[in-house]
Image 1: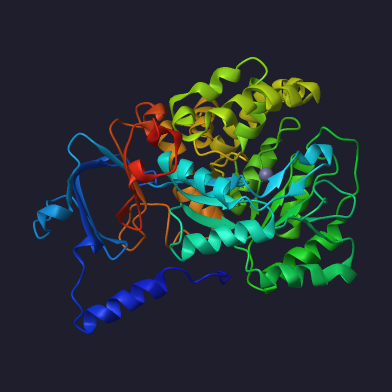
Image 2: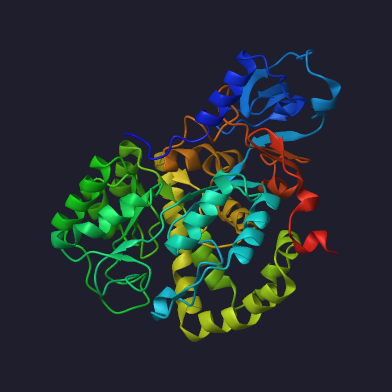
Length: 454
Ligand SMILES: [Zn+2]
C-alpha cells in the first residue's frame, strides 16, 4: 500500500545533496545523547549506558559503546536519564476547528489558528511529538498540517483525516462531514482525496456512541465498496465503532484500523483473537469515556501539573464547570461510569490476546495522553508495553512505522528524555527533561503556554 505522503525524505535528500556539493555541514544537525538508559519503543527491555547518534534528523547509531567523534556542543549527558521515542496520540480532535458537541447535533466550524497552535504546544510540552487528528474542520486542520510540515509553527507532527465520512442522518453526519448515502455520492470521496488526508475515517455507529436512539448507517455492501475505493487510491482507512458487532462489520469491509475500543459491553474472546491474528491496530481511546465518567466526581483532575502548565486557567475552569455540567446533564457521565469497567476489561483481553493497541485519547489536550497511559496500566498493561502502545504501535496505526515510533537506526529522531524510569511507574513518563523532533531539541521555555508566563 502506498502512503499518501512522502514526507521528510525529500528534505533529507536535499541536505545530503548539499553535503555532496561541499556545503558546510551545520553542527545543529548532529546530536549525541550519551550514557542513557534506552527504552526504544519496540518492547525490548531497557538498555543501559547507550549512546544515540542523530544526523540530519535521523537516528544513525544506537551504540552500547561511547561514540567519541561528536563536538562537545552537540552532546547531551544522559547519565541517570531515560530515553523513549516521542509519544503519539492516535486519536485527537485539535481544538480550534469546531465548537459544540456531536452528540447534541449542534456543531459549528471555526478557524481558530491561535487556539490550535497553543494546543499543539501543549502536546509537545507533554512529550507528544505526533498527533493523528481523527476528524475536524478540513480547512482548519489541513492548514495546521501545512504549517507544521513547512516549519511555520512549532508543533508535533500532524496527521489528519479532515472530514469524517458519515451516512446521511447518521452519527457525526453534521456540518463539515463528507456524507455518502449511496454509490451515487462517490464524488464526495474524490473531493476528499484531493485534500490528501493521511487516513480516511468512516463512522459506523447506529447508536451514536450509545447516547442516542438508533440512526441510519452504511450497509455492509456499501461500506466495503467505499473502503476498497479508498485503498485503491492509496489511502488507509479507519473506522469509528463502539461495539463488537460494528467492529466485525468494519473488519469485514477491510478497514486498516479501528478508531475506538469497544465500550458497549464485553467482547468475545474470539474477537480479541481475530484482532490479534489480523494484526489490525486499534486506538484505545479510553480517556474520552473515562474522563466523562470521572468529571462528575473529580473535576480537580484538571489541576494536575501538566494541565496547569499547558491549559489557560479559563479553559480549565470551563472544563470544571460548563463542560462538566453538560456531561452530567446529558446522562453521559452516569452511563460511562457503568461502562468503563467493561471497557478496561476489553483492553485487558485484547492485550492478553496480543492485539496491536495504539494509545489514543479522543481528547484535545496533550496531558490527556498521560491519562491514557495510566488507564492502560490500570487495565493490566505493563508500563513498558504502555510505552510501546504510545510509540511504535501508534506508528503502525498510521502506517508510518518505517519512519517513526522507535529509537532505531534510520528512523526520524523524535525522542523524549525523562528524569525517571517510566517502566517502573508510568507516571514517570511525565518527568520530561527534553523533547526532540527530527533530532532538534524543542525549546520548551519558548512555547506559548501558561507555564512560560508565570
Ligand atoms: Zn474521535
